[in-house]
Length: 327
Image (cartoon, rainbow, N blue to C red):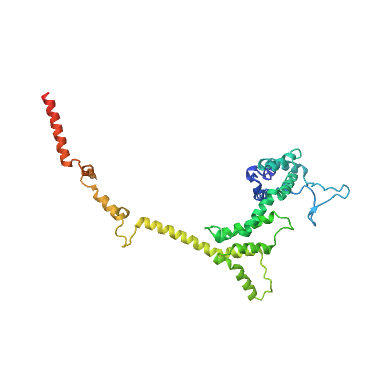
């Protein structure tokens, strides 16, 4: 039993921390995925009995209230709820989420906590504002004006993920239709030559095959077709980048072999640098030759020449030595 419990209890470090209201959707998806991977889906099920046919809560005909959820194994369920409640305490960091968790500390009912979290953030003002931002992006975003210089497949998948997030924030009656999502995606491809005609090509093929109008296409199928068309372009993009880097390496090693640039600096020519290094090496002495003295000072107007300066230094030394001897 201890091994079974340890394998069925998730660690708080495995869950995404919920710190910002805007990150509600990624947090919800990540937590649900982690819970399912640990076979703990019962911890976030609705706290009331659900009718499998209508997918609605079952109402007690006598009391008129919702029937609470009753687990099969009460002892195991209590241990799992206690451990998972500790996880929710650690990961729920927004003010409202903390409030909901603290209100259920006595019962540690994780199902009720999760139900109230979803109910609040699904209909909160922050979720509505986030929904408006996503809808505005879906209306105006275009690949050609986005400044996206990476693979087109990544832009397509990111745009489709934005549409999915917008749908997740809507109620069933307010969710956009599949055809509207296709129109959003098709509009975002305007101006991109190899992608803007994908939908038109599909309609033309359906018309040629004798398919009756309208030629409907699902959003998922439209995304897949765009990704297939974008693959050759992305492969070419990678080849051009690799070819450019290899060209830069070759130029840095071999130098410029063009005959038109005859006045180029010798220090950029590897062969000239090698000859200069050879001429600067004294084989007899086993080392570099002594550098020439810097005589730029003697070239200034009014200054002594190098020969005059040497004779002046010698005379000064002799007079100084004679003075010492006479003393």
